[in-house]
Image (tube, rainbow over all chains, first blue to last red; front, top):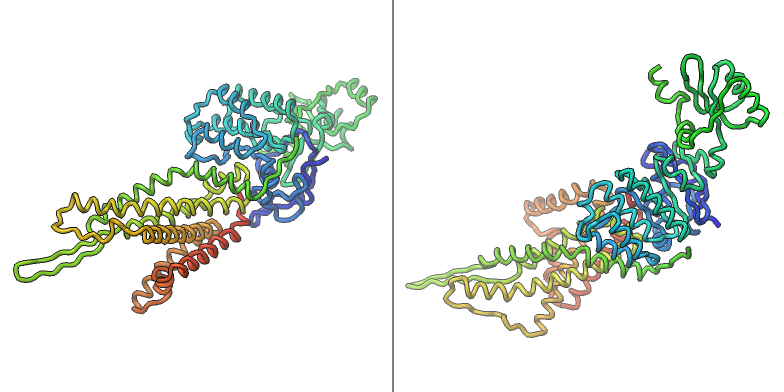
Length: 298
Length: 249
């Protein structure tokens, strides 16, 4: 059963097109990573799903309802990011009490435990918190509200490394105990890789890939070896990335359509085959030029 | 995970409860403003004097008119605040849609008007007591420390309605400004422009007609109908206009 269905969703801000014909659907109780470069349309997509903003055209369905102005979607969705709006007139403990009133699945115990684990003070107000602390507090609300659709838009902004890994662990544990649909957008794919089942890669407001992480890992291979030697093998393949290593050697990332025999031959000709890290692959896939920043300085 | 269903009534009620808690600080500014108004009123809101051979009479009027005027201003300004992003977006962090958000604001403003009117009514005896004890007057002619309950109730109801009407107006103005920042410039220009033009023309026009329409109604029932209709119109338009407003952080 799919929780989210988007068909040809387009969003324009004035003349600027943020999303163009976005089509994807997300199944129930999966953790999906929304990956993309700055300005790829991640936040816009997530905000449309949360019912914060309205698409310019296309069809959006969350829990089979159009999310904009839907109370049902609002009651079962939580959108967490570093700019989450929380009243400054209430202290942190009061904010948690309020969230409990609004969200029916609210887990009070979890909220309190996380609250004391991250050593918050009940009398503090949200705008007194530092950037990382704000994100941490928002994360507590996001986890404890136990919404059927939980959206984290770059939740770790400002968090230090220790808190980040705590957060991922808390997210995973709570997800295993109470499975729900989670969308997680982040710039650090390498950090969230172990959490994710699927990834949705956005590029220029369009879906570039939507597949499981396992498939993504199989998508490409890295080859290192003599330039001429490699060239013979990759002439009819799609090259995602190319760079020079050492004096004569080249490192290329190409689509993985090699057969077992071909791979064996490759190794025999002195070419090293390596796996490409998902994070790097996503960067290569979304690069506009094959050489990356190096091309600028050529 | 099973889905929770929420009705509009429940969502509005919860938002209202939340707003009562979160906006309790508004009362501080209300009390502060009303005390300032009391201070201003100590000079007398009206004054007349006459004299003759060997005597002179100065009459000062003390009333809470100014307090009520200040309270209306307070309601107007705070209603504008309620429509701003900070307040609007808070609702969407929790469970809300645009209708529930607007309705809860409306009920909240009605409550605030009731409280503000009650406070304003209290300042009237306060003013007279201060005038009696602190100001050096020979004679204090009391027109009404002891109003009849009907009078008191009528006064209270009328004050509440006036304050509510002004909050409806503020809410509408705030919503227009949220739709386009241009209104933030345009509306004051139109208001003061009309004021000046009409003053120069010397005859009563739009603003005065409107003032007379609302402020000089002698039938209480008609007055209630007028205020309820006007505020519903203002809140209805705000609701209609803000139904497309997006949540952009």
